Image (tube, rainbow over all chains, first blue to last red):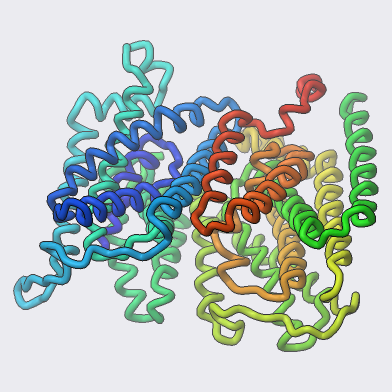
Amino acid sequence: MGLLYGLIAVGLALIFGLMDVTNFAHGEFLMIAMYLSFFLFAFFAIDPLLSAPLVAAAMFVFGAVVYLLLVRFAMRAKANAGMVQIFTTFGLAIVMRGLAQYFFTPDYRSIPQSWLGGKTISVAGIFLPEPQLVGALVSIAAFAGLYLFIHRTDFGRALEATREDPGAVALVGIDKNRVFAFGWGLGAALVGLAGAIMAVFFYIYPDVGASFALIAYVTVALGGFGSVFGAFAGGIIVGLVEAVTALVLPPSLKSVGIYAVYLLVVFIRPRGLFGSM
Amino acid sequence: MDKNFAARRRRDLIIAAVLVALAALAPLLIKDVYVQNILILTLMYAALSQSWNILSGYCGQISLGHALYFGIGAYTTELLFTKFGVLPWFGMLAGGVIAAIIAMGLGYPFFRLRGHYFVIATIVIAEIGLLLFQNWEWAGAAMGITVPVRGDSWLKFQFMRSKLPYFYFALVLCSLAWFVTWWLEDSKWGFWWRAVKDNPEAAESLGVVVFNSKMGAAAVSAFLVAIGGAFYAQFLAYIDPESVMGFQFSLLMALPAVLGGIGTLWGPVLGAAILIPMTELTRSYIGGSGRGVDLIVYGALIVAISLALPRGLVSLFSRSKAKGATR
């Protein structure tokens, strides 16, 4: 479960953590991805696992478009840039939820059978549900990929540089909007991947994103802004803490443990575990 | 303080007095209960947003967890009333004081945090409060509390037949929040807060005790929001954790101030006056389908206003503001 939170958080780690743009619609991105996955299954009988790349590609385009149409202008605001970002993306989240209700109806949906759903695999005597296992593997791969991407490619460096000083990168010929649009696309594609896998074993409904989004913010902040590895570690910690809390407290209180650990960590280390900002 | 500023403050006070007088007469003309309801909610959100604005607008500590104080106000009042028979008026004050104490207790560790870390901490603490109340059997858990009907009386602040008393209370609360803001703007605290918001290091070096000013702002802000929560609980005669402490509520409280103009005297009132009627009208005229059209319209308007007027709606009125800014 921890790696799953990691998977949802990895896209946010890129947008929120590395690019320092607040995205309150992250949970709704997840919701859209889950619906995409659902409809590809319902109409074309494509298994979510196969359609995951398709969903990711579609979300890439979606993320880039959202950046170019909305967020670009929100970032240009001369006053209250932080609040403008928060409420622009919050408004977007409400619109997306409304649209989902309008087109998909508020009904709960699920993918009844798939290659992975409901199956378990036995590793050294421990039974693991397959969807979660695949989710965990994809999550590790996604984090490794993002890490290499940020630290080893020119684009990754351009992204970090653009956040640091948009004026200076313009001087060396980097188009800020192109870099950030690509970053948003990538972040959305990653959450698309998460949505495709989660569609297999979660109910899908217009408000599904909200419950995961907050945990994703906490995960990114716990790990520390500006660190891909931090978000990954944050995801694992969040999962472990949740599991432990669920043993000690009633299940309905399991998130309290996560929140308490976040507070504890930032009180001791106000920059998060591995944060650079 | 130079003349412009003093003149502006006098003008603001006169405008406010006229508006309050007009608002107080409004129920003579407006008999429709539905419209009265919208007016009450508008005044309440204006009051809440004004209180939020003290900490987040003037002092610059963006809190998205104020639903915690709202919920504490609502729950303190109703728990004292239903379990111990304490009159809501005392419960209201108790709620305000408890909220202020909690705000200062939380401020102690919280105000060391900066930026996103602070904002997320405020969200998280409100969420913890929400979960605890949802699981607190004695306080009704997720089912909440239904306020028993004991007949109309000012003593118990309960009115079933008419909404007017609620209207006047909301008007008083809104005026109070406005007046406190107006008064603080020109006080030592007001100047400290703006200094802390603009540049905490510089403020500290000039002898502003940054930490204490943040604490003061948090306490005032939490106290007023909790009073609002107590009012809301009496007004609806029913509360449950999600509806008084949910994250959405924290955002709804911030929204009028942000759309109207964060850190300004008139922003929250202006924002609420436009946003709340709009919300209610879209909800009742196009929300009936249950298909979320109202959400689409509402969300799109938020996006449009945030993008078009990052300084808020007050910037539309601010030809004189440009002069004021050079003061």
